[in-house]
Length: 424
Ligand SMILES: *Cc1c(COP(=O)(O)O)cnc(C)c1O
View 1 (cartoon, rainbow, N blue to C red):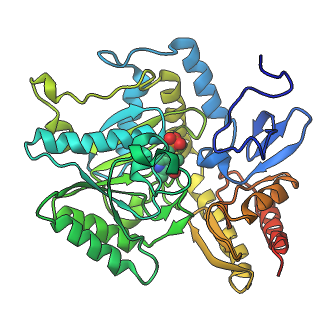
View 2 (view 1 turned 30 degrees about the vertical axis):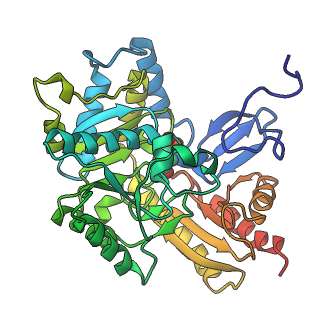
């Protein structure tokens, strides 16, 4: 029998021996999470990067309610429904030009797995099988075995290392060292043996890898090198999509269209689990055949769940009807004004920003994800009802777009104070 005073719930990325008590949230209101006792916590990380317009956006909730009364779920092989059809057309209309088909799944990790399977299926079906994948150093693409294989190796996945497949890792394009990345990409693409199937990368900012940024021209050049060498480019916009980097999709800033685009997190405004993998016509057409062996063999039980699709459609409408882009610009400007104060502060380093995401590193002797200061920072912020979850000594803000200027000022005030936690 489980002890009745201890919850049987096993939480993600949580060391229960150190953090036995989770905070129970009863309601979500805009940028705030509210407990049953009425404690109001400012959600400065959009509940793990998913909530874009704020919690319980009325239009999105109304769409969920209406769809739930019409059709809750239907098998998606051999059947379709209006929300999935409308959403696919809507996504193609707003995505970088040239993407023509939409495959649904239910999480960012699966959207990446689907992308990789599409890429390998493409090469096999055109009669030139390839299976080597190129990725960026410090990348993160999810926690499934495939996702872990594609991402950076570290404490997150050390126990599973024996199961992970090999990929070729390009050095991260740190400022001033971009050429090394591009050169490594050229070399990898040119390899006579084991020509890569695809390059998979998070455009402009690597999230879980530590909010590491690189400039649009580098992204553009990476895509051009892939194109010139006939290597597919897969953009993992699971985190960067839906306005985070200041534009709807990060790829827009480089003026590129990836061959395959992965979307999840903010696709439903963060209200429901749904993912989409978009691809160009040649990739779909390589699977098009009277030969059933060429079928794209992927499915999950809830592929294109109608309620989730309705939520995503409502999200598209919010982007159309509301001044979302003006809000992105407002948040970017507020970040910039606050960050200016930290640029000359010796207690911090690497002050950076991509659109609505701001990050800075607290100077410590032990840096990285397990930096001793990480949990202490988290505790310090949450004690003030601020949900900020540092990646080691990297403090970042990724608020929902309804966050107010006063909320942002409060967050930066707390970050300033947090510097006092490390003995100077
Ligand atoms: C979060 C994330 C994923 C995984 O998404 P899940 O929905 O958590 O499976 C994949 N790629 C990137 C870039 C992410 O930030």
